[in-house]
Amino acid sequence: MTEKKFELTDLSSGKKSLLPVKSGTIGPDVIDIAHIARDHDVFSFDPGFGVTAATESKITYIDGDAGVLLYRGYPVEQLAEKSSFMEVSYLLLDGQLPSRAQLEKFTRDISRHTMINESLLRFFNGFHHNAHPMAMVSAVIASMSAFYHDSMDINNPRHREIFAHRVIAKLPTIAAAAHKHSLGQPFVYPRNDLSYCANLLHMFFAVPCEPYYVDPVAAEALDLLFILHADHEQNASTSTVRLAGSTGANPYAAISAGVSALWGPAHGGANEAVLNMLEQIGSVENIPKYVAMAKDKNSHFRLMGFGHRVYKNFDPRAKIIRAACYKVLEKLGTSNPLFELALRLEEIALKDDYFVERKLYPNVDFYSGVIYSALGIPRSMFTVMFAIARSVGWVAHWQEMIADPAFRIGRPRQLYTGATRRDYAEITKR
Image 1: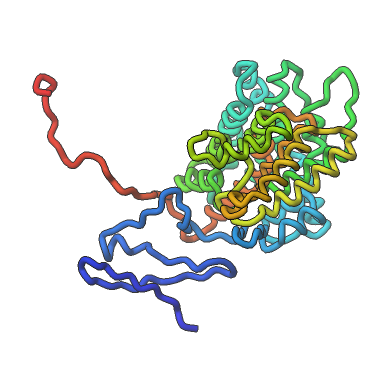
Image 2 (image 1 turned 60 degrees about the vertical axis):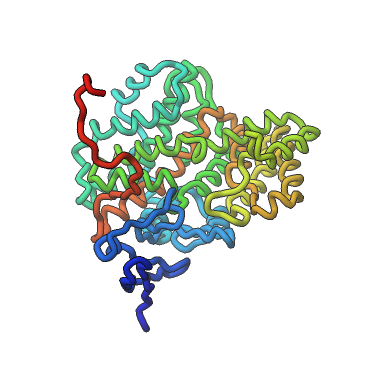
């Protein structure tokens, strides 16, 4: 097979060079520009890294035009229907679906790491009662390196495995502790006889003075949300984990950096923004007015939850969550006026040429907040729930990066537009 090359011509000097073209198993080819600075004395310029492949990965594939999301080659629709979050976690970390025995062992390994050191629990008492949960979670995860420094050799595969299990197992416990601290309630310890999501709900809502029953419908809905949020290729938070980890920093610091990146309203905080928007709209009668505002360039109002940086078609996760909303609200016996408002807003927007022409379809955040609300999870915890799910993807990408023979520190370059060289002037002469 002929190796593909891309010809680059410098129009000012006429100098030409052939750049190697690399092909993946599916998806667009990439041009290897590693030597253009050496050969042409130029850098590439791609603000936001929209068309830059910064790494090679085998974990997740997205076709934004076709609305396709694959975890290790498996369509997310199939995994959402047939799998569990623990099985998907194994898949993302290992690369293959587990046998029954492998899944049972993996689940046991995770459950045995659910408790956190009592000193870590006392950390929460140092936060103000109304501190944002993401601030607490990010800080406590970073502090884990002070407790588990005996197994943080990033070049030791067994240490990497232990780290992976600890993060996935302990993050729900840390998140629940942040929630309880904000309520002024006692911390609830994990129960290893419960499933991953049932245990999380128990730690969130149980109190010592009475028994708490975890609704299996709620646990099933949470498990589905976690599957859909488990990974999403080289997004902002995953790229942050990779960049921080590329320095050789301890892995807990890298995950903490990912949590901080996820906190942004343009990333993990979008589902909270959707509910705030729906409340601002208020009623079906107000939808046309707000849709018109969204189309007005002079208006600051935006329809949150519509459109996606990668998907130029329907977000496949949004379709699954939309169907799940009906199921959850029906089985839990609750009505949610915001869900009805969201459905009507979607219907009106998708009949409007402005949104259709720009391919602004509902994304995963448009409906996920509705389910979280139905489960009783407060909005301040929405992004924390996202972090719990995405921690699996973060760990998988970190492990892949560390094990890569081509692993090197990340170092983006820039187009400098500041002052040219100038000499220092004494303060009396300025």
